[in-house]
Length: 317
Image (cartoon, rainbow, N blue to C red; front, side, top):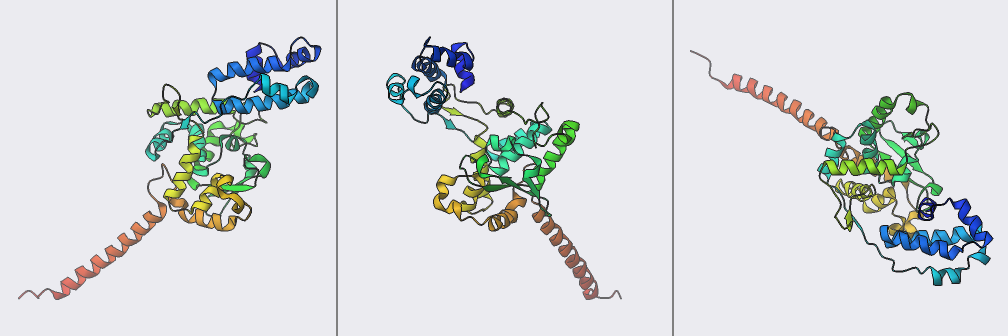
């Protein structure tokens, strides 16, 4: 919000605040110019949120005497608030193709987004210590209340396949990954990847499989499309709806139930279907074991049948 404000006024935030305090301009004039420009390029919902943030920032920096809510509401009107864009969701095969085409870094990013249901900022801010590796080969991921949009503690999970991609990604990075506490290290040792760069790379991957936005931007593919994909993916393998909502983090749909979640039971149920949550691994491991067992069993039956037939055949004269 501040970055766009500075760009609109061709000035840094410190200079704008000082100008308001000295009476060279007003908070209302600065805000109105900014919001009017913002309406040309951003959705009505984004404008609504930024306008609200701007009021709070000015009241905290220049004081309520120079930024009264009643005057602000009159001179910088809210305007219409509605969702103007629909987030399109890729199919399983399209996601699978994107993963095949991605480099190790973005294969890992896509894998985490597609299976965990985390928001992109939740993904990028995860540290290695947030992963609890289980003996079965998967990981439980911890998200504290102050790190989530719904402000409640929750867990999500990563499959063995995705953990393997993370390992390959860290091997690909070398010392950068070893020296960083984050799953997705940034250029700075103590920072993680930034959203804008990840968004741009994933938009490019969308384009490689023919997924482009509508010309009027009413229907778009975004990083957040993977939250919907993840929820649908979990439902498709038979996970309980309540558990899907808990894992993905839809607190509003869970209502009061969000305070009474049994995460041990959720993990047990997720673990039971996790072998089906694969993209590039050939087949379901459990199904492959069953096929191999039946193949061996059938082979033994065929051998037994051959021996019985040999005994039943009449002796040669």
